[in-house]
Every structure is written in C-alpha cells, then in structure tokens.
Length: 272
Image (cartoon, rainbow, N blue to C red; front, top):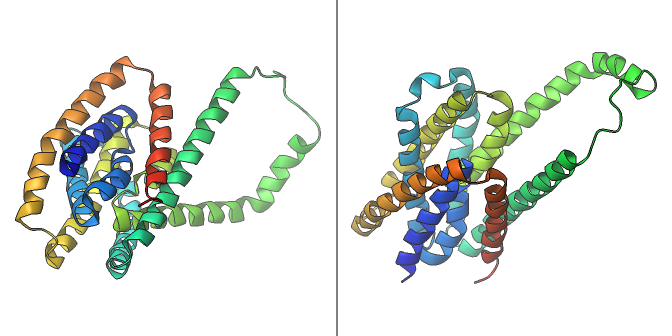
C-alpha cells in the first residue's frame, strides 16, 4: 500500500512541477521518506530528476547559458559531494536528517507564502506619489553608492556563492536543492528558454554525480530498479498533466497551493 502511495506522490508532485516549474522533488521527498524510506526515495527521485532534466534539455540545448552553468557547477559540485559524505555519515540517524529537511522545507514554505502575500499587498496598493522627490535620502543615495559600491558588489558575490553552496549541500543530502538554485538563477537569467535549459543541465550533471556515487556504494539492486521503472510513467503523466493545467489555470493559486503543501510536507517530517 505504501509503495502505491509513493507512486501517487510522484504523480501529484510532478503535476505541481509542471505547473509551477519547481518544487517537484522537494514536495515529493518528505512524503516519500515517510512512505518508502531514504534508501528508496533518494535514489528513485534523483534519477527521476535526471530524466526530467534530459527531457527539458533535449529541445533547448542551444539555449544553455554556459557562463552561468560553469559558475553554478563549479560551486555546487563540491558541495554536493560534501552533502553525500554527510548523508552517509548520518545514515544511522535518519530522524535527524528528517528534522533537517523538515526545517528547510518549512523555511521555504513560509518564505514563499510571505512573498506571495507581500506581492498581493503591493499589487493592491495604489502609488501615493507619482512625482520624484528631490530632498532627503534620495539626494544622498548616489554619494553612498559611490562609496560603498565596491563592498556591496563583493558582498553580493559572496552571497551568491553561499546560496550556490547551500543549494549543492542540500542537493547532496536530499536531492532537492532546486529552490535555492532557482532563487539564484532567476536573478541572473531572464530568458525563459535559457533559464530552463541551464537549470536542466545543472541537474543532469549534479544528479549524474549522485547516481554514480550510488552505483559505487551499491545502493542499487533489482528491487530498486523495479520501483524506478514503475515510477517513470507516473513522472511522465504528472509532467504532462501539469503542462496542460499550466495553460488553463491561475498560476498564483497553484503557487499558493504549492507552498501550503510544502508546509504540510515539512511538518510531517517532525512526526514518526
């Protein structure tokens, strides 16, 4: 029964993935850990992520932003390896890993919900002044930026590296570092095709590293291969259904649903 529910989770999570463009794995992981355990959930969802990346890249490979790709992989790849080592070290303490992931998912859910509510408030508020101001802080701002521009730039660069490293670490631990990476890439790649192609290539490379490490460690067996093959149609059906719903339904509503589901998923990891 739990295995059947696991496939249903894959289906529903990838419907959300098809609609929102993210959250498929991080939404599926908490429920999957509870249903089938880490030894099944992590390898299967990792390979599904790799497969979905290949699917997206196949028709968009010319749009890859190579500069951003190299920058992201250079920081994230070592962090993924550290995450893999940490997960192996903590394999005897699964509940601790569940708490860590639960905290990450809850933080993402709360942050996302707050962002949506703030956006609604901004859209509903009418601007009070249409003219420009000529006194006070506005006059001082250019002088301040000239003085602090260099340090601000270095601080922003350090923050970018920290976000990429955190994304890689979470991905190595739980195969769901996507939201952090999306937060980074969305500021640097504005073209939709380039964004999708670049992030898909990153997942292919990182998930490929995780897959190779799983093969070397002997994580894969006949039973796991069977689960993986059964899960593929659920992935395809979910992505297809999500792409149809994306064209017909309100994106904001589904983003709200996604963050609420993430909040619930995060809470489940704190209970046996």
